[in-house]
Amino acid sequence: MFTQNKNSIQSIKNERGFVLVVALVLLLVLSIIGVMGITSSTVENIMVGNTRLRSTHFFEADSGVQIAMPMVNQVMGDKNNDGFAGLIPDFNINAFVQELTLQPFAPDCRDDFKFEGNDGLVSVDIDRMYRRRAAGCSIEFASEADIAGRCTNVFYRINSTSASAETGAKATVGTVYRYVPTR
Image 1 (cartoon, rainbow, N blue to C red):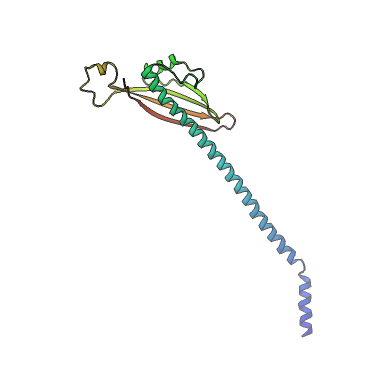
Image 2: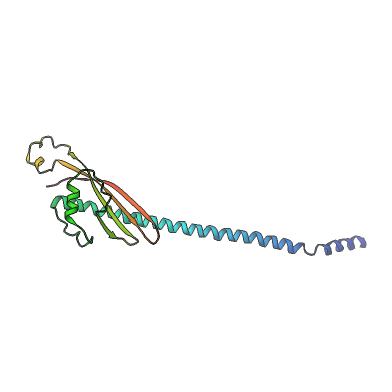
């Protein structure tokens, strides 16, 4: 019986480095899991940053559309730019009125006005598309209302782009706006 114990003790002495190998393999597996966790969190941070930039520029471009709609109403209705001259630097009211009233659907590939947003430059282009007789104006066809232009709706295409030079982020919002004369 004593010889059997002696053989067992001898075999255990021969496997002295086995625990070290198992410990190193476990350490390697845990290191790989840790590196993968750090890598995935870094990628997620980049994705969150890109999403924030995209939504910021989208809302800035949308603000350009929201500014353009009342501008069309005021310039077409009153032919003035009261309140907009201070908001938009270098705003040329004469060129703007000419573009809104003259040639239908002549995209000019130039911005009508620009302004600085929080994260970039917002550029707005407004192009006149077409006119259409308003519904319910057939009775007033020969009346003074038709001569004054109140029976005609004018449709405009408004494109607003927000872009940042330093990040390269860009967003564009486009809409079709119907101007309905009220006077």
